[in-house]
Length: 477
Image (tube, rainbow, N blue to C red):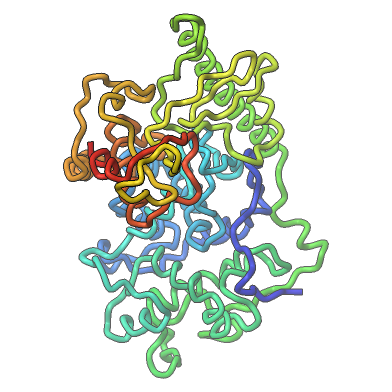
């Protein structure tokens, strides 16, 4: 029995790190019927009167996105990869793929989870991750359209009635469907919402695919004129309509349990490929751990007294730091009975047999001590912040450049704007002396405005007596 999608339902696929996405998770048969339909019924402004199939128009929309990199465009020239990537993009389009998911084994950030997709990895090529795919789709707009993109079904139909066909690109049209799932369902799908078409249920994949294509044509090409009555010659007819009820959405076919069990069956070759992809991921994790262990050993050997020196890192989070890592990936995190853990910089450090020297903080927590302060001037607030004295600024262990001169906050802001890429991989976030000093200054300003230390308190703070008059002098050194 079909069920309606409630607002509270979690539409996105929810799997642990390292767990493959199966055909049942993706509703692969539904995707196959959508992208295998070669009905050339959709208008493309750049091809003139020539009509395209849904698959070709959707791939073209991805290719024309300004956020599609050259490497991706080159791979999309291969039909098999283009179809697989477009299927994954459509799932992202309707909300089935969360922005915490990643689909390439080399992923190193702990902010996402890695998932192999055997059915969509028939060829070599990077399937990217949820945030990048969604950004590509969001920036896919009609030529010359920079704002006022239609956001509701009514706005889409208003553009069609005004003669603008197509009124939006397919990705943005599908975003409208997803954001107004209940409204689309009430208007065209009876007791189902739009997102129900992509969720596991007992209706056939073929009928759901045809209903989806009917919706895309209805809003992309526009409903027929004359109060939804088709012309006598059949012009303007939605090619995906119900054959027994011209102009209406196709009927959704309900399957028996035995019939439903025959859909989205995982073939043995997909299972074997999933195991190989998981093994590939484990090898990459292990290789990363070995490199980090070698760096730690080298640093320990070159430090006087055998005290481990701080590893030189780039502020990257480890690829095995994700909580809830699957059992195969947890095994890759073990090496010679020493469990790697993240240090304060996001790098790996060994907890046995030696313990690294704690990092010297840039900030010190200040607590007022009446026994150590004169009665005049008035005592400072109970808690405040101060930065280290200037002579200590270039001696803490973070600094990779001993002769780096501090920037002002304005100079640093201009440097960030001029040199950073807002879409750069999270693994490439800068972590140098200037970034840390800028964060220190900002934290001091926030603490001073609020009159208390940040919540939660930064780690590694020490208590020292400090006069209130020192505050302003030390703040912007």
